[in-house]
Amino acid sequence: MRTIFGVPHRSKVLRRAAVTVLAAALVAGVATPAAATAQDRPELHKAIQEWIDDGFAGMQMRVHDERGDWVGSAGVRKLGESAKPPTNGRYWIGSTTKTFMATVVLQLVAEGRVGLDASVAGYLPDLGLDPRITVRMMLQHTSGLFNYTGDAYADGVWVPGLPSVGKEWVDNRFKSYQPEELVRFALSKPAKFAPGTSWGYANTNYTLALLLIEKVTGRPYAEEMQRRILGPLRLTGTSVPGNRPDLPGPHAHGYYRYEDAGQWKVVDVTRQNLSLLAGAGNMISTTKDVQTFMSALVSGKLLPAALMTEMSTPDPRSAGLFGSYGLGLYVLDTGPDCAGIVLNHDGSPPGGYGSLMYSTPDGSKVLTASLTSGDAAVDTATVFPKALNRLVNEVFCDGRQAQ
Image (cartoon, rainbow, N blue to C red):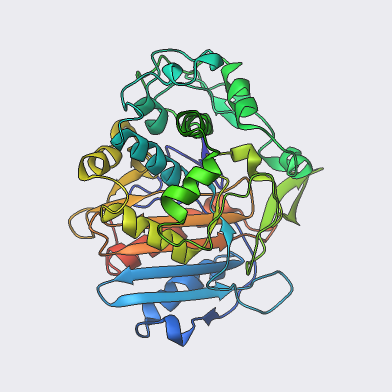
C-alpha cells in the first residue's frame, strides 16, 4: 500500500482532499510579489502560513479563481536562512508526472497509434507481460503489476522494492536506473492480482508507459514530452532530467526525515537522481507551469473531449484518500457545498518535496503548490491531513468546512 507521510493511501482521514506533501521546519512570514497578485488575498496568505506554523519548511502556491490570479510563498528557502521560497522556484513534482505521461499516451490513442483497450504486450513483446494487461489498465493502475518501489499483497504482506525510503534510500539516492531495469524488477515479483480484477497504485505502470511511448514513436520520451506538451505550452521551467540530480534555476531546498540508529534525522536531498521513478515521478517544474498544463488539459487543448472524459472517469475500486483514479488523474468529489468535482494529482519524490495540482473540470479554479520539508521533530503523518483539509476548504469551499 502506498503511503503519504505515513498516512495509508486508502486512508479515510481525508475524504475531501487529495495531495502528496512533505514534512518540514521553520516558521516565517509570507512573501507575495505585487506584480503577480490580482489583489490582496489575506485568506490565502493565512492558508499557506498555517502550513509553516504546523512545521513545514517552505511553501509556494498559485491560485486561479473568479477573483483572478494569486501567487505567494511562506517559510524559508533553506534551513538556517531567512529568504522565502521563490515563487518561480523549480521543484521535483514526483507523481504529478503521471498526468503528463498519461496525456502523451492518450494523444497517441487519439492519433490511432495506440489502442486504449489493446494489449500492452502487443507493443512491447520482449518484456514477457501478461497479454491481458491493456493500455487502459496500465494508466488506471488495474494491471496488477508489482510496484517496484515496494508493495503490499492482498494478504497484507509488504514486499520491499528498490531503495525508496529511509536510510537505504538516503544512501542510494544518486544511483542510476534504466526504465527497462525497473520494469523487469517488477516483473520478477508475482502479480498482485489478475489484470483488471482490482486496483493497486504502482509506479511500474507509468515506467511501462514510458517504454510504450518510446517504442511507438521511435523517440526518447523526454523528446516526445518536449514536442507534444512542454514546447507547445511554453513550459520553460519544466524538464525531464534523466540522470541529472540538480534542480536548475531558482529553487527551495528540500530535506528528508529518516530514522538512523534510533534517532530521527534530516538530510538535504535537493540533489537526487530520480531515474528511480522514470516516467512515474521524475519531472521538474514550477507552480506556474503546472497551472498552465492543468488549465490546458481541462480546456481541451491537449486531448479531444472523448479522451478527456475517459481520463476523468474513475475506477470506483480506487476510492481512497485522493478521490478515485481515472487515467492519470484523481477525481475528487468535494460535494455541492464546495466546488463539486475536482481533478487532481499530487506528487512527491522519495523525499524533500511535495507537489499539489487541483482543478475544477472547467478550469475556473486551479491550485498548484510546492512544499518542502525539514524538521526532524515533526511527524508529518499527524500534521498533513489537517493542513491539507484547511487548504482545500479555503480554495474549493470558499473557507467553508467540508464534510
